[in-house]
Length: 465
Ligand code: CFM
Image (cartoon, rainbow, N blue to C red; front, top):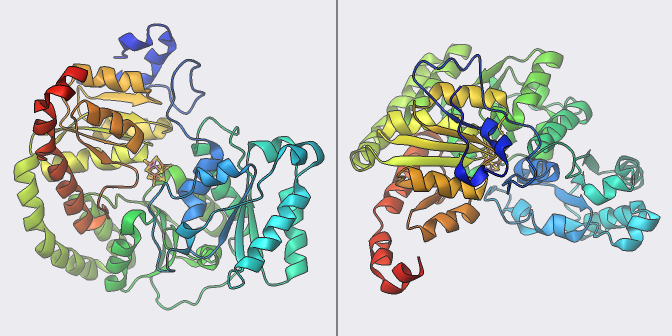
């Protein structure tokens, strides 16, 4: 049970149960670091809230609906434009921000009228848009508003609109993970099965847990088009509201991000008996495995091999060029959770890199089980890491590059260590064959940038450090 208490955590010793270093022969079926529990008071957590998990990660990606945030305007503004998920609908979903803009008087007298007014105003401003997500926030949940009743009234009054309500106040749950759960289960309960898709192929799938970060969905869609597979819905990359209502008609659910969307796959299995197939869509070798598994399910093995052969011919040479230059470089992955287990072995097997420390904001026990099984001996695995811990990690291990968000990224840059945006990417897409090359290129550009040696030579910078 090799747990580690960082020096910076001496005043919060409970943090020891959240930091693990893998040892040779360790049986992780018997022991895992604690995760998905409340943040320890005093630890400067990096987590997000339940509302953020529902809106920023899943709902906000949908390309043809208004995203109405029922609460103070800050909740709406702070989850706007912080994630890069384009769409072929002229990026409608990225352009606007909507809020019922509640104030003190609404907290005292109720905010339902204010919500109704905001919903009707928004539909009037965007007459072509007939779909809407409404999210609750801490304030409007605490005062006991009933947004579902308001939305039913508006649907009746306007006649041609469809509204989905997500009850995801920030205080629900211990992290954004709760918001994923709420949205998955609510959508399954209220919307799936309320519309029938046009079936164009005998091979139909849903791609679950891919949010079109910098075009990931477009890459995957091309592979499935070539294989003759119809994607009923991507949950939720470049998708329409109505496509998501038709998910019950797929013959297979292909799951990438199991943390944010495994719930809906499980529900579709339970209610509609649609099998769930977990795959990795990041990583040069992993995507081959994924396409072969999907091909085997439908008897389309030849088609899968054709796609793989074409893509390998195009991209393997490029990947190898980067592999030569990245081999042996040391990496940290500090993101939400699943990317730890999707990426660690892919970086090691595809590029010969060494993943030396990983931190998950909100991964559950099953995420740690996967990442520790796939990760190296000697690597540090952290649950709900805080910034002081990150700096201590960097004092103790050498890292050539770090995958993390812009906030921690800007801090590590001051230590002259390059970072790559592990959430929204630097220059994606990162999925599929071309994505693996893009990811390698971004790491190469980060590590080999002359900026680091130049910054190190600037006497003013050295003095300040
Ligand atoms: Fe899934 Fe995601 Fe992730 Fe995630 Fe996130 Fe994300 Fe993430 Mo940032 S859905 S769990 S809640 S793969 S936003 S697109 S990158 S922390 S590891």
